Length: 72
Image (cartoon, rainbow, N blue to C red):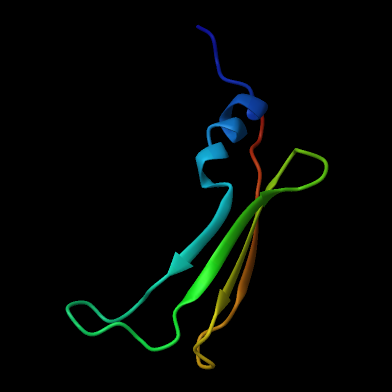
């Protein structure tokens, strides 16, 4: 059986690449003020997808995620 490679699995994340607007709030409630944005971009090595999220609400933390894949 053919198994996908780590590179194949990562390339499936390509639709995420770009900048996204965020809106958050409690279930069934009004959105919290400020919103935010999340940026997905490939690391220069091409081996990882990097997500950087910036939130305008001081009580909420910004975040940085590195997404990779082990060989299948």
